[in-house]
Length: 180
Image 1: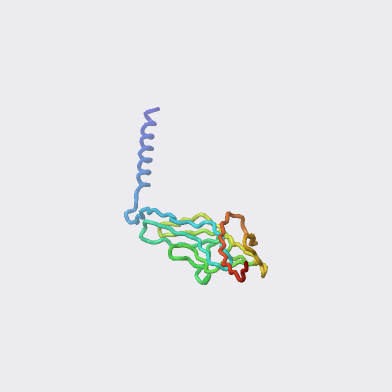
Image 2: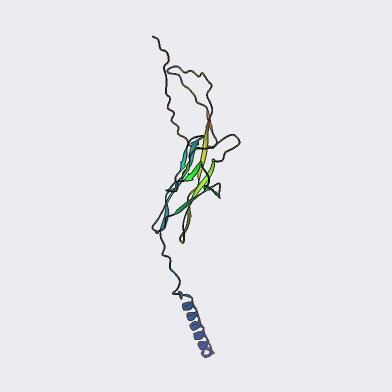
């Protein structure tokens, strides 16, 4: 009985070998694309912007490929159409620049979550980490606010998202009258 099974087993092994070697055959006419490393050198970070002022979300990608990366931006998960946008545009390094941040009580077009996507044709795409652009809204001071030397002045403001903030305020003081 073992003598009958041996030829069948040998035939099965030969067929398996031929099938596996045939699957590894590479068509000589197909072009090979060598792998090129592709990574972000700078990724966007959470940013606190001021309404009416410029803002910048940094992004830059690098590759050893001969073709430079094309950088596009997503806002809240959707690709942005920046072709005809006069306020926002992608800089040559891939960063997203806002000429003037727009923000009002009912219109917050710039506030949101941003992500840059770098693409190299025939190589692929990579997506950066997400970054939140928040807009600080400074409330106006009452006219005629007077502070004497040594007193404190509290400037009211609110922010739309809780995040760590460091703000420097430079005041140009004018001493209008002084008497001893």
